[in-house]
Image 1: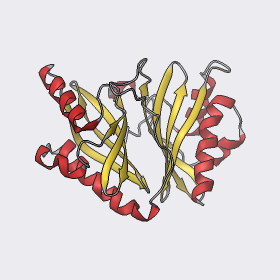
Image 2 (image 1 turned 60 degrees about the horizontal axis):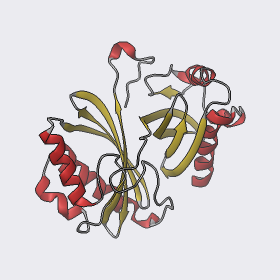
Image 3 (image 1 turned 30 degrees about the vertical axis):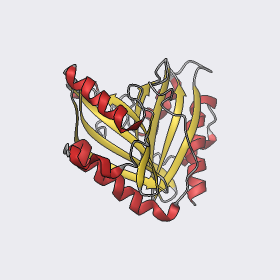
Image 4 (image 1 turned 90 degrees about the horizontal axis):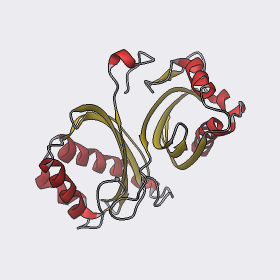
Length: 255
């Protein structure tokens, strides 16, 4: 079942590139709820978004896909109206997709200070028996450090300075994270996590969807962590500004 749903999600996303109609049949048109605020609600909104793409212009490469119960999340390299990296979350009900969330960020033109991109790195899902423990570890880290700023607890979640970072502005290691936070503070740029909306995981990968503010703007944070031997060892993320209510194309909210 897990592989079937993962395959269905991968095929659905690829249909953005190919235009193939068959994968879209996994969406339940009577129940589909859209949380991408730039897209109209329901299957009609999804179809309209596809129609707006210039023929043959879209490229889609899904690199990671995981399942947690009725939810499947994917980490994908896109190129439509410019290159982007995105996380998509789909909720299944009775074998069909009934809800979708995503978070998209333009692809940086250069690697980060450690030479990494927003999407490279390990893809294999392992340690399935550790899923619950890994989700708790990551949820505690986000609550302790990112939401509540308990920096004295930071080092307990990591194995020394062994931490591979894919954020475009931050170097590897806790030393890289500390330097970036210090630079942002010096520049007067605040990154605030206010609320965690969802924690999903499979094996060594855990995705957290949160909201807050970055540089004074309402922001959606999607953070993907890789866990190894009870420690966080790798991190990918996307940040997307949440548009004002007047610009929403559906009434479902970002989360």
